[in-house]
Length: 458
Image (cartoon, rainbow, N blue to C red):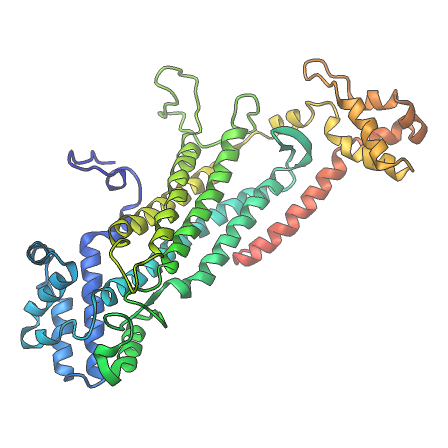
Protein backbone atom coordinates (compact mmCIF):
# COMPACT_ATOMS: atom_id res chain seq x y z
CA UNK A 1 0.00 0.00 0.00
CA UNK A 2 1.37 3.39 -1.00
CA UNK A 3 1.94 5.95 1.72
CA UNK A 4 -1.13 8.22 1.99
CA UNK A 5 -0.92 11.86 1.02
CA UNK A 6 -0.44 14.15 4.01
CA UNK A 7 -3.62 16.10 3.30
CA UNK A 8 -6.05 13.14 3.23
CA UNK A 9 -8.57 13.04 6.06
CA UNK A 10 -11.02 10.17 5.52
CA UNK A 11 -9.56 6.64 5.93
CA UNK A 12 -11.63 5.55 2.92
CA UNK A 13 -9.23 7.60 0.80
CA UNK A 14 -6.14 5.69 1.85
CA UNK A 15 -6.94 2.71 4.12
CA UNK A 16 -10.25 1.04 3.29
CA UNK A 17 -12.00 0.08 0.12
CA UNK A 18 -10.96 -1.19 -3.29
CA UNK A 19 -9.90 1.49 -5.80
CA UNK A 20 -12.47 0.28 -8.33
CA UNK A 21 -15.28 0.66 -5.77
CA UNK A 22 -14.11 4.08 -4.60
CA UNK A 23 -14.00 5.10 -8.27
CA UNK A 24 -17.78 4.69 -8.54
CA UNK A 25 -18.16 7.74 -6.32
CA UNK A 26 -15.24 9.82 -7.57
CA UNK A 27 -16.03 13.41 -8.51
CA UNK A 28 -15.08 12.77 -12.13
CA UNK A 29 -17.29 9.68 -12.40
CA UNK A 30 -20.25 11.46 -10.88
CA UNK A 31 -19.74 14.49 -13.13
CA UNK A 32 -19.72 12.23 -16.20
CA UNK A 33 -22.79 10.40 -14.91
CA UNK A 34 -24.67 13.69 -14.66
CA UNK A 35 -23.65 14.55 -18.21
CA UNK A 36 -24.89 11.17 -19.37
CA UNK A 37 -28.27 11.86 -17.79
CA UNK A 38 -28.44 15.30 -19.44
CA UNK A 39 -27.66 13.69 -22.80
CA UNK A 40 -30.42 11.12 -22.29
CA UNK A 41 -32.84 13.97 -21.59
CA UNK A 42 -31.84 15.68 -24.83
CA UNK A 43 -32.32 12.49 -26.85
CA UNK A 44 -35.72 11.69 -25.41
CA UNK A 45 -36.88 15.31 -25.81
CA UNK A 46 -35.86 15.33 -29.47
CA UNK A 47 -37.51 11.92 -30.03
CA UNK A 48 -40.72 13.39 -28.62
CA UNK A 49 -40.50 16.30 -31.07
CA UNK A 50 -39.57 18.99 -28.59
CA UNK A 51 -36.67 20.15 -30.77
CA UNK A 52 -34.73 18.81 -33.79
CA UNK A 53 -32.68 15.64 -33.48
CA UNK A 54 -29.60 17.53 -34.68
CA UNK A 55 -29.75 19.66 -31.54
CA UNK A 56 -29.86 16.56 -29.33
CA UNK A 57 -26.93 15.08 -31.24
CA UNK A 58 -24.89 18.22 -30.59
CA UNK A 59 -25.69 18.04 -26.88
CA UNK A 60 -24.83 14.33 -26.81
CA UNK A 61 -21.48 14.94 -28.54
CA UNK A 62 -20.67 17.70 -26.08
CA UNK A 63 -21.62 15.53 -23.08
CA UNK A 64 -19.45 12.64 -24.30
CA UNK A 65 -16.51 14.81 -25.26
CA UNK A 66 -13.57 16.16 -23.30
CA UNK A 67 -14.87 19.71 -23.33
CA UNK A 68 -16.98 19.75 -20.15
CA UNK A 69 -14.46 19.61 -17.32
CA UNK A 70 -14.64 19.46 -13.57
CA UNK A 71 -12.43 22.52 -13.45
CA UNK A 72 -14.97 24.57 -15.39
CA UNK A 73 -17.82 23.07 -13.38
CA UNK A 74 -16.10 24.10 -10.14
CA UNK A 75 -15.59 27.65 -11.42
CA UNK A 76 -19.27 27.99 -12.29
CA UNK A 77 -20.42 26.40 -9.04
CA UNK A 78 -18.37 28.92 -7.07
CA UNK A 79 -19.97 31.66 -9.15
CA UNK A 80 -23.58 30.43 -9.03
CA UNK A 81 -23.60 28.60 -5.70
CA UNK A 82 -25.65 25.86 -7.42
CA UNK A 83 -24.26 22.56 -8.68
CA UNK A 84 -26.83 21.73 -11.35
CA UNK A 85 -26.86 25.25 -12.75
CA UNK A 86 -23.08 24.93 -13.01
CA UNK A 87 -23.48 21.56 -14.75
CA UNK A 88 -26.01 22.77 -17.31
CA UNK A 89 -23.93 25.85 -18.11
CA UNK A 90 -20.75 23.77 -18.43
CA UNK A 91 -22.51 21.50 -20.92
CA UNK A 92 -24.29 24.32 -22.75
CA UNK A 93 -20.98 26.10 -23.37
CA UNK A 94 -19.75 23.05 -25.27
CA UNK A 95 -22.95 22.43 -27.23
CA UNK A 96 -22.90 25.57 -29.33
CA UNK A 97 -26.30 26.84 -30.43
CA UNK A 98 -27.89 23.61 -29.16
CA UNK A 99 -26.90 24.69 -25.68
CA UNK A 100 -30.20 26.55 -25.32
CA UNK A 101 -31.94 23.17 -25.02
CA UNK A 102 -29.67 21.78 -22.29
CA UNK A 103 -31.67 20.92 -19.15
CA UNK A 104 -34.86 22.17 -20.83
CA UNK A 105 -37.93 21.43 -18.69
CA UNK A 106 -35.90 19.62 -16.02
CA UNK A 107 -35.38 20.39 -12.37
CA UNK A 108 -32.12 19.68 -10.56
CA UNK A 109 -33.28 16.46 -8.94
CA UNK A 110 -34.44 15.04 -12.24
CA UNK A 111 -30.72 14.81 -12.97
CA UNK A 112 -29.40 14.14 -9.46
CA UNK A 113 -31.93 11.48 -8.49
CA UNK A 114 -31.74 9.71 -11.83
CA UNK A 115 -27.96 9.63 -11.48
CA UNK A 116 -28.51 8.29 -7.96
CA UNK A 117 -30.56 5.45 -9.49
CA UNK A 118 -27.60 4.62 -11.72
CA UNK A 119 -25.27 4.68 -8.71
CA UNK A 120 -27.55 2.40 -6.73
CA UNK A 121 -27.71 -0.09 -9.60
CA UNK A 122 -23.92 -0.11 -9.96
CA UNK A 123 -23.53 -0.38 -6.19
CA UNK A 124 -25.90 -3.34 -6.07
CA UNK A 125 -23.91 -5.09 -8.80
CA UNK A 126 -20.61 -4.57 -6.96
CA UNK A 127 -21.95 -5.68 -3.59
CA UNK A 128 -23.79 -8.59 -5.16
CA UNK A 129 -20.49 -9.83 -6.58
CA UNK A 130 -18.72 -9.54 -3.23
CA UNK A 131 -21.62 -11.30 -1.54
CA UNK A 132 -21.30 -14.19 -4.01
CA UNK A 133 -17.65 -14.55 -3.02
CA UNK A 134 -18.52 -14.83 0.65
CA UNK A 135 -21.31 -17.30 -0.06
CA UNK A 136 -18.88 -19.48 -1.97
CA UNK A 137 -16.36 -19.42 0.87
CA UNK A 138 -18.99 -20.30 3.47
CA UNK A 139 -20.34 -23.13 1.31
CA UNK A 140 -16.89 -24.63 0.79
CA UNK A 141 -16.00 -24.56 4.49
CA UNK A 142 -19.41 -25.88 5.53
CA UNK A 143 -19.14 -28.78 3.08
CA UNK A 144 -15.62 -29.53 4.31
CA UNK A 145 -16.77 -29.67 7.93
CA UNK A 146 -20.35 -30.94 7.64
CA UNK A 147 -19.42 -33.91 9.85
CA UNK A 148 -16.81 -32.26 12.08
CA UNK A 149 -18.06 -32.70 15.67
CA UNK A 150 -18.07 -29.84 18.15
CA UNK A 151 -20.15 -28.58 21.03
CA UNK A 152 -22.87 -26.02 20.46
CA UNK A 153 -23.05 -23.19 22.98
CA UNK A 154 -25.96 -21.17 24.29
CA UNK A 155 -25.47 -18.31 26.74
CA UNK A 156 -21.76 -19.03 26.38
CA UNK A 157 -22.27 -22.45 27.98
CA UNK A 158 -21.95 -25.94 26.52
CA UNK A 159 -25.35 -27.02 25.15
CA UNK A 160 -25.47 -30.16 22.97
CA UNK A 161 -23.24 -31.70 20.29
CA UNK A 162 -23.54 -30.68 16.66
CA UNK A 163 -21.16 -30.15 13.73
CA UNK A 164 -19.10 -27.20 12.64
CA UNK A 165 -20.59 -27.56 9.17
CA UNK A 166 -24.06 -27.03 10.57
CA UNK A 167 -22.90 -23.89 12.40
CA UNK A 168 -21.55 -22.52 9.12
CA UNK A 169 -24.70 -23.53 7.22
CA UNK A 170 -26.74 -21.28 9.53
CA UNK A 171 -24.59 -18.32 8.47
CA UNK A 172 -24.70 -19.39 4.84
CA UNK A 173 -28.48 -19.41 4.67
CA UNK A 174 -28.63 -15.98 6.31
CA UNK A 175 -26.43 -14.51 3.57
CA UNK A 176 -28.50 -16.28 0.91
CA UNK A 177 -31.52 -14.40 2.25
CA UNK A 178 -29.57 -11.17 1.87
CA UNK A 179 -28.87 -12.07 -1.76
CA UNK A 180 -32.58 -12.68 -2.28
CA UNK A 181 -33.41 -9.34 -0.64
CA UNK A 182 -30.98 -7.50 -2.91
CA UNK A 183 -32.41 -9.04 -6.07
CA UNK A 184 -35.97 -8.35 -4.97
CA UNK A 185 -35.12 -4.77 -3.96
CA UNK A 186 -33.16 -3.76 -7.07
CA UNK A 187 -36.18 -2.75 -9.21
CA UNK A 188 -37.36 -0.51 -6.37
CA UNK A 189 -34.08 1.33 -5.88
CA UNK A 190 -32.79 1.62 -9.47
CA UNK A 191 -35.28 4.26 -10.58
CA UNK A 192 -35.23 7.76 -11.97
CA UNK A 193 -37.55 10.54 -13.02
CA UNK A 194 -37.93 13.35 -15.51
CA UNK A 195 -40.93 15.19 -14.18
CA UNK A 196 -39.97 18.82 -13.60
CA UNK A 197 -40.22 21.12 -10.64
CA UNK A 198 -42.66 19.29 -8.36
CA UNK A 199 -43.08 16.04 -10.23
CA UNK A 200 -46.13 16.81 -12.39
CA UNK A 201 -44.32 17.09 -15.73
CA UNK A 202 -46.06 20.38 -16.46
CA UNK A 203 -42.88 21.93 -17.87
CA UNK A 204 -42.92 19.40 -20.73
CA UNK A 205 -46.59 19.92 -21.57
CA UNK A 206 -48.33 17.12 -23.43
CA UNK A 207 -45.00 15.51 -24.27
CA UNK A 208 -44.13 14.87 -20.61
CA UNK A 209 -45.01 11.18 -20.46
CA UNK A 210 -43.31 10.34 -23.73
CA UNK A 211 -40.15 12.24 -22.78
CA UNK A 212 -39.88 10.55 -19.39
CA UNK A 213 -40.56 7.10 -20.81
CA UNK A 214 -37.87 7.46 -23.49
CA UNK A 215 -35.45 9.00 -21.01
CA UNK A 216 -35.72 6.10 -18.56
CA UNK A 217 -35.66 3.46 -21.29
CA UNK A 218 -32.42 4.99 -22.53
CA UNK A 219 -30.87 4.64 -19.06
CA UNK A 220 -32.53 1.27 -18.33
CA UNK A 221 -34.03 2.54 -15.08
CA UNK A 222 -37.41 2.08 -13.49
CA UNK A 223 -39.79 5.01 -13.07
CA UNK A 224 -40.75 6.88 -9.92
CA UNK A 225 -44.51 6.99 -10.61
CA UNK A 226 -45.43 9.79 -8.22
CA UNK A 227 -42.43 11.93 -7.35
CA UNK A 228 -42.50 15.22 -5.54
CA UNK A 229 -39.41 17.14 -6.55
CA UNK A 230 -37.50 14.10 -5.31
CA UNK A 231 -37.48 10.39 -5.90
CA UNK A 232 -38.91 8.91 -2.69
CA UNK A 233 -36.22 8.70 -0.04
CA UNK A 234 -37.64 5.43 1.24
CA UNK A 235 -35.74 3.83 -1.64
CA UNK A 236 -32.32 4.98 -0.45
CA UNK A 237 -33.27 4.21 3.15
CA UNK A 238 -34.21 0.66 2.15
CA UNK A 239 -30.86 0.12 0.46
CA UNK A 240 -28.93 1.45 3.45
CA UNK A 241 -31.02 -0.71 5.77
CA UNK A 242 -30.05 -3.70 3.62
CA UNK A 243 -26.39 -2.70 3.94
CA UNK A 244 -26.80 -2.58 7.72
CA UNK A 245 -28.45 -6.02 7.73
CA UNK A 246 -25.63 -7.55 5.73
CA UNK A 247 -23.05 -5.85 7.94
CA UNK A 248 -24.76 -7.26 11.03
CA UNK A 249 -24.65 -10.78 9.58
CA UNK A 250 -20.97 -10.30 8.79
CA UNK A 251 -20.43 -9.09 12.34
CA UNK A 252 -22.19 -12.21 13.60
CA UNK A 253 -19.75 -14.48 11.74
CA UNK A 254 -16.75 -12.37 12.74
CA UNK A 255 -17.81 -12.37 16.38
CA UNK A 256 -18.12 -16.16 16.29
CA UNK A 257 -14.59 -16.44 14.91
CA UNK A 258 -13.32 -14.08 17.59
CA UNK A 259 -14.95 -16.11 20.35
CA UNK A 260 -13.86 -19.49 18.99
CA UNK A 261 -10.30 -18.15 18.70
CA UNK A 262 -10.16 -17.29 22.43
CA UNK A 263 -7.24 -19.06 24.11
CA UNK A 264 -9.57 -21.07 26.37
CA UNK A 265 -11.58 -22.34 23.38
CA UNK A 266 -9.04 -22.29 20.51
CA UNK A 267 -11.19 -24.17 18.02
CA UNK A 268 -10.57 -21.89 15.05
CA UNK A 269 -8.08 -19.23 14.07
CA UNK A 270 -8.36 -16.66 11.34
CA UNK A 271 -5.49 -16.56 8.80
CA UNK A 272 -2.22 -15.27 10.23
CA UNK A 273 0.99 -14.79 8.26
CA UNK A 274 3.57 -16.38 10.52
CA UNK A 275 6.42 -15.06 8.37
CA UNK A 276 5.86 -11.38 9.10
CA UNK A 277 2.52 -10.54 10.74
CA UNK A 278 2.70 -9.06 14.23
CA UNK A 279 -0.02 -9.66 16.80
CA UNK A 280 1.19 -7.25 19.46
CA UNK A 281 3.92 -4.65 19.73
CA UNK A 282 4.92 -6.07 23.12
CA UNK A 283 3.40 -9.58 23.52
CA UNK A 284 5.15 -11.52 20.79
CA UNK A 285 3.03 -14.64 21.30
CA UNK A 286 -0.22 -12.95 20.29
CA UNK A 287 -2.21 -14.11 17.26
CA UNK A 288 -5.05 -11.61 17.42
CA UNK A 289 -8.20 -11.99 15.24
CA UNK A 290 -7.63 -8.50 13.82
CA UNK A 291 -9.49 -9.03 10.54
CA UNK A 292 -12.60 -10.30 12.31
CA UNK A 293 -12.36 -7.41 14.76
CA UNK A 294 -12.09 -5.02 11.83
CA UNK A 295 -15.28 -6.49 10.34
CA UNK A 296 -17.08 -6.01 13.65
CA UNK A 297 -15.81 -2.45 13.98
CA UNK A 298 -16.86 -1.32 10.51
CA UNK A 299 -20.22 -3.09 10.94
CA UNK A 300 -20.94 -0.80 13.90
CA UNK A 301 -20.54 2.21 11.63
CA UNK A 302 -22.61 0.67 8.85
CA UNK A 303 -25.47 0.02 11.27
CA UNK A 304 -25.53 3.74 12.05
CA UNK A 305 -25.86 4.94 8.45
CA UNK A 306 -29.58 4.20 7.91
CA UNK A 307 -30.44 6.67 10.71
CA UNK A 308 -29.93 9.83 8.62
CA UNK A 309 -31.58 8.11 5.65
CA UNK A 310 -34.73 7.57 7.72
CA UNK A 311 -34.64 11.23 8.72
CA UNK A 312 -34.30 12.22 5.06
CA UNK A 313 -37.63 10.60 4.25
CA UNK A 314 -39.25 13.53 6.10
CA UNK A 315 -39.37 16.58 3.80
CA UNK A 316 -41.01 20.00 4.10
CA UNK A 317 -43.89 19.97 1.62
CA UNK A 318 -42.65 18.85 -1.83
CA UNK A 319 -39.00 19.10 -0.83
CA UNK A 320 -36.36 20.84 1.22
CA UNK A 321 -32.58 20.60 1.17
CA UNK A 322 -32.04 19.02 4.59
CA UNK A 323 -31.28 15.63 3.02
CA UNK A 324 -28.73 16.83 0.49
CA UNK A 325 -25.53 17.36 2.46
CA UNK A 326 -25.62 14.13 4.48
CA UNK A 327 -26.53 12.04 1.43
CA UNK A 328 -23.16 12.96 -0.06
CA UNK A 329 -21.66 10.79 2.69
CA UNK A 330 -24.20 7.99 3.05
CA UNK A 331 -24.11 5.98 -0.17
CA UNK A 332 -20.34 6.14 -0.85
CA UNK A 333 -19.47 5.20 2.72
CA UNK A 334 -22.05 2.41 2.86
CA UNK A 335 -21.00 0.78 -0.40
CA UNK A 336 -17.23 1.14 -0.02
CA UNK A 337 -17.23 -0.07 3.59
CA UNK A 338 -19.67 -2.94 3.08
CA UNK A 339 -17.63 -4.17 0.14
CA UNK A 340 -14.56 -3.99 2.41
CA UNK A 341 -16.39 -6.00 5.10
CA UNK A 342 -17.55 -8.69 2.66
CA UNK A 343 -14.14 -9.06 1.03
CA UNK A 344 -12.29 -9.17 4.33
CA UNK A 345 -14.69 -11.70 5.83
CA UNK A 346 -14.37 -13.85 2.71
CA UNK A 347 -10.60 -14.01 3.28
CA UNK A 348 -11.16 -14.94 6.92
CA UNK A 349 -13.63 -17.72 6.09
CA UNK A 350 -11.57 -19.08 3.18
CA UNK A 351 -8.39 -19.24 5.24
CA UNK A 352 -9.93 -20.35 8.52
CA UNK A 353 -7.78 -22.78 10.49
CA UNK A 354 -10.02 -25.35 12.14
CA UNK A 355 -8.60 -27.40 15.03
CA UNK A 356 -10.78 -30.50 14.87
CA UNK A 357 -8.96 -32.21 17.71
CA UNK A 358 -9.52 -29.24 20.00
CA UNK A 359 -13.21 -29.33 19.07
CA UNK A 360 -13.37 -32.98 20.11
CA UNK A 361 -11.61 -32.28 23.40
CA UNK A 362 -13.94 -29.40 24.19
CA UNK A 363 -16.94 -31.55 23.33
CA UNK A 364 -15.75 -34.11 25.88
CA UNK A 365 -14.83 -31.53 28.54
CA UNK A 366 -18.05 -31.91 30.53
CA UNK A 367 -17.73 -35.70 30.67
CA UNK A 368 -21.03 -36.42 28.96
CA UNK A 369 -23.12 -33.63 30.49
CA UNK A 370 -23.83 -32.25 27.01
CA UNK A 371 -26.04 -35.32 26.47
CA UNK A 372 -28.24 -34.62 29.51
CA UNK A 373 -31.13 -33.67 27.21
CA UNK A 374 -30.99 -37.03 25.45
CA UNK A 375 -31.06 -38.91 28.75
CA UNK A 376 -33.94 -36.76 30.02
CA UNK A 377 -35.99 -37.50 26.87
CA UNK A 378 -35.19 -41.21 27.05
CA UNK A 379 -36.29 -41.28 30.69
CA UNK A 380 -39.56 -39.58 29.74
CA UNK A 381 -40.02 -42.19 27.02
CA UNK A 382 -39.75 -44.85 29.76
CA UNK A 383 -42.81 -43.41 31.51
CA UNK A 384 -41.37 -40.72 33.82
CA UNK A 385 -43.02 -37.31 33.64
CA UNK A 386 -40.86 -34.89 31.68
CA UNK A 387 -40.71 -32.41 34.56
CA UNK A 388 -39.56 -35.16 36.90
CA UNK A 389 -37.01 -36.43 34.39
CA UNK A 390 -35.70 -32.89 33.98
CA UNK A 391 -35.26 -32.61 37.75
CA UNK A 392 -33.35 -35.90 37.86
CA UNK A 393 -30.86 -34.64 35.25
CA UNK A 394 -30.67 -31.18 36.80
CA UNK A 395 -29.76 -32.78 40.12
CA UNK A 396 -27.16 -35.03 38.52
CA UNK A 397 -25.44 -32.12 36.73
CA UNK A 398 -25.92 -29.17 39.06
CA UNK A 399 -22.56 -29.45 40.86
CA UNK A 400 -20.38 -30.41 37.91
CA UNK A 401 -16.89 -29.03 38.40
CA UNK A 402 -14.81 -28.72 35.26
CA UNK A 403 -11.64 -29.24 37.35
CA UNK A 404 -12.72 -32.61 38.78
CA UNK A 405 -15.65 -34.07 36.87
CA UNK A 406 -17.38 -37.28 37.62
CA UNK A 407 -18.66 -38.55 34.25
CA UNK A 408 -22.41 -38.23 33.79
CA UNK A 409 -22.57 -41.90 32.88
CA UNK A 410 -21.13 -42.86 36.28
CA UNK A 411 -23.52 -40.52 38.08
CA UNK A 412 -26.48 -41.82 36.08
CA UNK A 413 -25.61 -45.45 36.80
CA UNK A 414 -25.65 -44.62 40.50
CA UNK A 415 -29.03 -42.87 40.43
CA UNK A 416 -31.96 -44.99 41.64
CA UNK A 417 -34.50 -43.58 39.17
CA UNK A 418 -32.24 -44.16 36.18
CA UNK A 419 -31.18 -47.62 37.41
CA UNK A 420 -34.82 -48.68 37.47
CA UNK A 421 -35.38 -47.37 33.95
CA UNK A 422 -32.19 -48.44 32.15
CA UNK A 423 -29.51 -51.05 32.06
CA UNK A 424 -25.95 -49.62 32.23
CA UNK A 425 -25.32 -50.34 28.55
CA UNK A 426 -28.51 -48.45 27.66
CA UNK A 427 -27.33 -45.41 29.58
CA UNK A 428 -24.01 -45.60 27.79
CA UNK A 429 -25.80 -45.78 24.44
CA UNK A 430 -28.05 -42.80 25.18
CA UNK A 431 -25.08 -40.68 26.29
CA UNK A 432 -23.14 -41.38 23.10
CA UNK A 433 -23.06 -38.09 21.09
CA UNK A 434 -23.21 -40.05 17.84
CA UNK A 435 -26.98 -39.73 17.46
CA UNK A 436 -26.94 -35.94 17.83
CA UNK A 437 -23.94 -35.60 15.52
CA UNK A 438 -25.59 -37.80 12.90
CA UNK A 439 -28.69 -35.63 12.99
CA UNK A 440 -26.57 -32.49 12.69
CA UNK A 441 -24.66 -33.92 9.76
CA UNK A 442 -27.84 -34.97 7.96
CA UNK A 443 -29.38 -31.54 8.35
CA UNK A 444 -26.17 -29.82 7.32
CA UNK A 445 -25.99 -31.90 4.14
CA UNK A 446 -29.60 -31.13 3.27
CA UNK A 447 -29.13 -27.40 3.84
CA UNK A 448 -25.87 -27.35 1.92
CA UNK A 449 -27.40 -29.17 -1.04
CA UNK A 450 -30.10 -26.50 -1.14
CA UNK A 451 -27.51 -23.73 -0.89
CA UNK A 452 -25.34 -25.27 -3.59
CA UNK A 453 -28.32 -25.39 -5.95
CA UNK A 454 -29.12 -21.75 -5.22
CA UNK A 455 -25.52 -20.80 -5.97
CA UNK A 456 -25.39 -22.95 -9.11
CA UNK A 457 -22.69 -25.18 -7.62
CA UNK A 458 -24.53 -28.44 -7.16
